Length: 186
Image 1 (tube, one colour):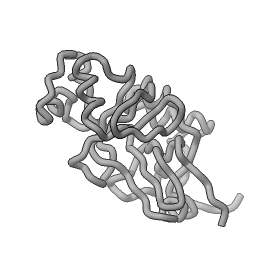
Image 2 (image 1 turned 90 degrees about the vertical axis):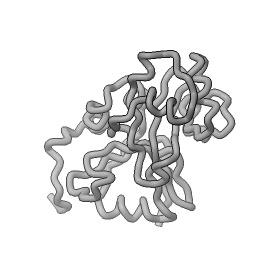
Image 3 (image 1 turned 180 degrees about the horizontal axis):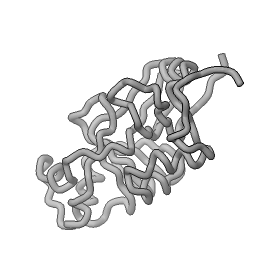
Protein backbone atom coordinates (compact mmCIF):
# COMPACT_ATOMS: atom_id res chain seq x y z
CA UNK A 1 0.00 0.00 0.00
CA UNK A 2 1.45 3.35 -0.99
CA UNK A 3 1.80 6.00 1.66
CA UNK A 4 0.45 9.48 1.23
CA UNK A 5 1.12 12.50 3.42
CA UNK A 6 -1.91 14.76 3.70
CA UNK A 7 -0.28 17.36 5.93
CA UNK A 8 -1.45 20.82 4.79
CA UNK A 9 -4.45 19.40 2.93
CA UNK A 10 -8.16 19.85 3.40
CA UNK A 11 -10.42 16.89 4.05
CA UNK A 12 -13.87 17.48 2.61
CA UNK A 13 -16.54 15.27 4.19
CA UNK A 14 -18.48 13.42 1.52
CA UNK A 15 -22.30 13.72 1.58
CA UNK A 16 -22.62 10.15 2.90
CA UNK A 17 -20.66 11.05 6.05
CA UNK A 18 -23.10 10.28 8.87
CA UNK A 19 -20.76 10.82 11.82
CA UNK A 20 -22.24 13.98 13.41
CA UNK A 21 -18.74 15.13 14.37
CA UNK A 22 -17.74 15.37 10.71
CA UNK A 23 -20.87 15.64 8.53
CA UNK A 24 -20.58 18.72 6.26
CA UNK A 25 -17.14 19.61 7.58
CA UNK A 26 -13.92 20.94 6.16
CA UNK A 27 -10.93 19.70 8.15
CA UNK A 28 -7.42 21.10 7.87
CA UNK A 29 -4.82 18.33 8.30
CA UNK A 30 -2.00 19.64 10.49
CA UNK A 31 0.00 16.44 10.70
CA UNK A 32 -0.15 13.09 8.91
CA UNK A 33 2.35 10.29 9.16
CA UNK A 34 2.81 6.60 9.90
CA UNK A 35 1.42 7.03 13.43
CA UNK A 36 -1.82 8.69 12.34
CA UNK A 37 -3.18 12.14 11.62
CA UNK A 38 -4.30 15.29 13.42
CA UNK A 39 -6.60 17.94 11.98
CA UNK A 40 -8.80 20.86 12.93
CA UNK A 41 -12.37 21.29 11.70
CA UNK A 42 -12.35 24.84 10.30
CA UNK A 43 -15.96 25.50 9.32
CA UNK A 44 -17.86 24.95 12.58
CA UNK A 45 -17.90 28.10 14.71
CA UNK A 46 -19.41 27.63 18.16
CA UNK A 47 -21.50 30.07 20.18
CA UNK A 48 -18.45 30.85 22.33
CA UNK A 49 -16.51 33.99 21.49
CA UNK A 50 -12.83 34.66 22.04
CA UNK A 51 -13.84 37.16 24.75
CA UNK A 52 -15.55 34.38 26.70
CA UNK A 53 -12.60 32.02 26.19
CA UNK A 54 -10.08 34.64 27.32
CA UNK A 55 -12.23 35.32 30.37
CA UNK A 56 -12.19 31.60 31.24
CA UNK A 57 -8.39 31.42 31.01
CA UNK A 58 -8.09 34.71 32.92
CA UNK A 59 -6.32 36.67 30.19
CA UNK A 60 -7.51 40.22 29.54
CA UNK A 61 -8.31 40.81 25.87
CA UNK A 62 -8.29 44.48 24.93
CA UNK A 63 -9.28 44.12 21.25
CA UNK A 64 -13.11 44.10 21.22
CA UNK A 65 -13.25 43.19 17.52
CA UNK A 66 -11.04 40.15 18.03
CA UNK A 67 -13.12 39.27 21.09
CA UNK A 68 -16.23 38.91 18.95
CA UNK A 69 -14.54 36.21 16.83
CA UNK A 70 -15.95 32.72 17.37
CA UNK A 71 -14.16 29.81 18.92
CA UNK A 72 -14.40 26.80 16.59
CA UNK A 73 -15.34 23.19 17.19
CA UNK A 74 -12.03 21.63 16.15
CA UNK A 75 -13.06 18.02 16.58
CA UNK A 76 -14.19 15.50 19.17
CA UNK A 77 -10.78 14.83 20.80
CA UNK A 78 -9.69 16.85 23.86
CA UNK A 79 -12.54 19.34 23.59
CA UNK A 80 -11.39 20.99 26.81
CA UNK A 81 -8.09 22.00 25.19
CA UNK A 82 -7.42 24.97 22.93
CA UNK A 83 -5.68 24.82 19.56
CA UNK A 84 -4.64 27.94 17.66
CA UNK A 85 -4.13 27.78 13.90
CA UNK A 86 -2.22 30.86 12.86
CA UNK A 87 -0.08 32.66 10.33
CA UNK A 88 2.67 33.69 10.32
CA UNK A 89 4.38 30.79 12.02
CA UNK A 90 5.99 32.82 14.82
CA UNK A 91 8.00 31.52 17.74
CA UNK A 92 5.71 30.08 20.42
CA UNK A 93 6.38 27.54 23.16
CA UNK A 94 4.47 24.65 21.61
CA UNK A 95 3.99 25.03 17.86
CA UNK A 96 3.70 22.43 15.14
CA UNK A 97 4.84 23.97 11.84
CA UNK A 98 2.24 22.80 9.33
CA UNK A 99 3.85 24.76 6.47
CA UNK A 100 6.31 27.60 6.04
CA UNK A 101 3.69 30.13 7.15
CA UNK A 102 0.98 28.23 9.08
CA UNK A 103 1.35 26.78 12.57
CA UNK A 104 -0.74 25.02 15.16
CA UNK A 105 0.03 26.17 18.70
CA UNK A 106 -1.25 24.67 21.93
CA UNK A 107 0.60 26.85 24.45
CA UNK A 108 -1.02 29.78 26.25
CA UNK A 109 1.73 32.22 25.22
CA UNK A 110 0.18 32.73 21.77
CA UNK A 111 -3.13 33.71 23.39
CA UNK A 112 -1.37 36.06 25.80
CA UNK A 113 0.39 37.71 22.85
CA UNK A 114 -2.94 38.06 21.02
CA UNK A 115 -4.39 39.73 24.11
CA UNK A 116 -1.55 42.27 24.04
CA UNK A 117 -1.95 42.87 20.29
CA UNK A 118 1.38 41.14 19.59
CA UNK A 119 0.10 37.81 18.30
CA UNK A 120 -0.04 36.33 14.81
CA UNK A 121 -1.83 38.34 12.13
CA UNK A 122 -4.38 35.59 11.40
CA UNK A 123 -5.81 33.14 13.93
CA UNK A 124 -8.44 30.45 14.18
CA UNK A 125 -8.96 29.24 17.75
CA UNK A 126 -10.61 25.88 18.32
CA UNK A 127 -11.51 23.61 21.17
CA UNK A 128 -10.69 20.00 20.38
CA UNK A 129 -9.17 18.36 17.34
CA UNK A 130 -9.80 15.50 14.95
CA UNK A 131 -7.48 12.54 15.32
CA UNK A 132 -6.92 9.33 13.39
CA UNK A 133 -4.85 6.34 14.48
CA UNK A 134 -2.26 4.74 12.19
CA UNK A 135 -3.92 3.77 8.89
CA UNK A 136 -7.38 4.96 9.96
CA UNK A 137 -7.51 8.01 7.67
CA UNK A 138 -6.21 5.98 4.74
CA UNK A 139 -8.98 3.43 5.37
CA UNK A 140 -11.61 6.20 5.48
CA UNK A 141 -10.27 7.60 2.20
CA UNK A 142 -10.51 4.14 0.60
CA UNK A 143 -14.15 4.00 1.79
CA UNK A 144 -14.89 7.28 -0.01
CA UNK A 145 -15.56 9.19 3.24
CA UNK A 146 -13.40 12.19 2.25
CA UNK A 147 -12.18 14.16 -0.71
CA UNK A 148 -8.76 15.77 -0.37
CA UNK A 149 -7.29 18.94 -1.84
CA UNK A 150 -4.18 20.99 -1.14
CA UNK A 151 -4.97 23.48 1.58
CA UNK A 152 -4.98 27.20 0.98
CA UNK A 153 -4.27 29.52 3.92
CA UNK A 154 -6.53 32.09 2.28
CA UNK A 155 -9.48 29.72 2.69
CA UNK A 156 -8.56 29.24 6.37
CA UNK A 157 -8.14 32.88 7.28
CA UNK A 158 -9.75 35.10 4.62
CA UNK A 159 -13.01 33.27 3.83
CA UNK A 160 -16.02 33.35 6.20
CA UNK A 161 -16.57 29.99 7.95
CA UNK A 162 -19.80 29.16 6.10
CA UNK A 163 -18.04 29.65 2.74
CA UNK A 164 -14.92 27.56 3.50
CA UNK A 165 -16.33 24.19 2.43
CA UNK A 166 -17.60 25.46 -0.96
CA UNK A 167 -14.30 27.37 -1.44
CA UNK A 168 -12.29 24.18 -0.90
CA UNK A 169 -14.60 22.29 -3.25
CA UNK A 170 -14.12 24.91 -5.94
CA UNK A 171 -10.36 24.22 -5.80
CA UNK A 172 -11.32 20.78 -7.15
CA UNK A 173 -13.70 22.25 -9.71
CA UNK A 174 -16.64 20.53 -8.01
CA UNK A 175 -19.99 21.91 -6.89
CA UNK A 176 -20.71 20.31 -3.49
CA UNK A 177 -24.44 20.12 -4.20
CA UNK A 178 -23.71 17.85 -7.19
CA UNK A 179 -21.70 15.27 -5.26
CA UNK A 180 -23.21 11.80 -5.16
CA UNK A 181 -23.17 9.49 -2.18
CA UNK A 182 -22.70 6.50 -4.45
CA UNK A 183 -19.43 4.97 -5.53
CA UNK A 184 -19.61 3.31 -8.88
CA UNK A 185 -18.37 3.09 -12.39
CA UNK A 186 -19.18 5.21 -15.40
